[in-house]
Length: 215
Image (cartoon, rainbow, N blue to C red; front, side, top):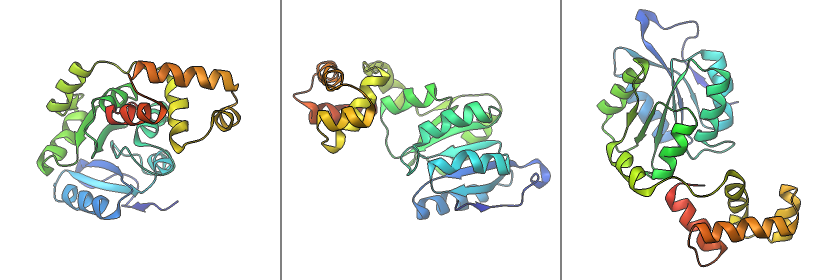
């Protein structure tokens, strides 16, 4: 596991300990540098993969985990859900390029306390880290408004799973083998997903669901 760490065992002066998960090294290092300028914040661990988040959190016991959504191994949303179960005391901030209402809803369902887009000012990010430790929720106001307008995702978890798996162009037979379902069941899930997204076909349903942040 490629983990860069600060000193374990507690930060001096009661500083807020932050775990930073971001697969793009330049972005991750820039965020770490910006947070490091804050006198009350210390980045104690950095990881580049979603499936490294929980192990790093166990090792370094951060107060706040700052997670990107799109990462190899596991998405930030899935990592947030596991982290919430394994280490419920860790506050979770989702930071992403993708300002999609569906992502916001899924982030909140995963147990995140904050959701910010990456072009937010650095002071806003540092402020969010402090606020979640006070028990507040911090949500980008534009995304919050869009989520209310957009409504909840109409797809069930199983429909999302099948639609997501179909994105690589696999046939129904291939999907059935991969997901341990019958071809008829796969066909029914895809048909329902197409109807619910008002799409023209399977590829269009995938595009619409991704644009909404449902996948």
